[in-house]
Length: 307
Image (cartoon, rainbow, N blue to C red):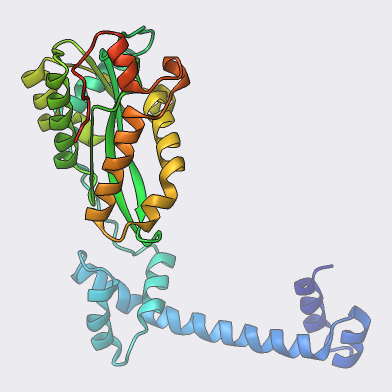
């Protein structure tokens, strides 16, 4: 038998038996009995006050259907002639299903997004590719903690899948199109420095709004003749940049945490990118640095620095 059932039975039996006898028979303490009875009384009193308040709340809702509970509160206090607790009002509006049901108008997807939805299943041009050097670039953003972990910056980079070379990157406090285009400008200059035409190369990314924006597509497709490829399964479809982030951030985490500001962080990243491109050996290209691998393929002048 539950406690509520015991209390109900005690109430029914009090006319024939003493309270103490009923409590003892059912194993209920006097403290529990008096607490629950007092609580039930208070609950009934609250419910009675709420029912008196309800028609006044309904009137304010009908007079001002666009009001939320904050704007409703002053008018309601005029109706009842006393202060009304805002938490109580909000709770009662939800309980009586009188809360303001706003319709959130979502922006229509851009034409680019609509096209991508129609082309679902055919967006990943990188799948199945066996790219040569500088034919397939993988890109994305990541967060870089600095200033002892108290602040975060956003870093974007582009990695050549075949050579592991990073021809461009940019870091800033906001993950936005401006930062992405800053990175792309460096990449274009780096390709020019090694005498490579960008027309026809594939740039692979996820479907982040930055990478589906008109400005991004105009810079890559219209101005440079690049082919765009998109992940259809998030990070699973873009393993190259994820692998790069894993190595680059793990190896340099302590350095970046020591950076005091964005200028300091940018300098550290620049130094480590030079090391990554020019000195760090990669097993995927025969335990050579990316620049050495590209030179072995007959690509570029002596200096492939991205500074």
